[in-house]
Image 1: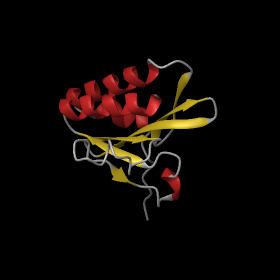
Image 2: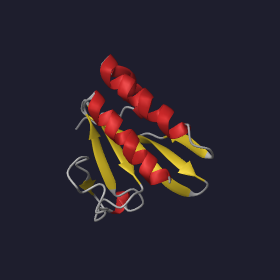
Image 3: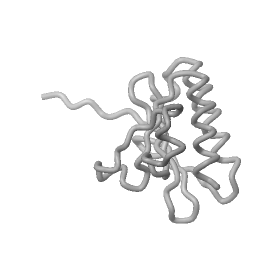
Image 4: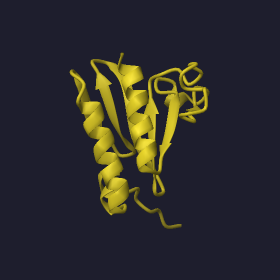
Length: 121
């Protein structure tokens, strides 16, 4: 049996196309524009914390960026149909950041930035 070593997040993000890299850069810039929000790169994702509280995660699944946010996915502003969040509150790994937004386009990045603004208020 041959085991394949898992590639780091930095390696995987450097191997995606330029369009996905630009989406990633826009999201990171938006999140780091808030005071006291620090980023940390791990093997699976990039996490953003404000003090000890986890505020966001950015992971990569295939060619899709996945943005996990610490906002209630059942919030009226989110579930009205404009943002299409996925509720992952049942999964233990995403208890702190239960809302997942798939990022596949420039419009999705703009909508994600609006949700980040709502979360940080």
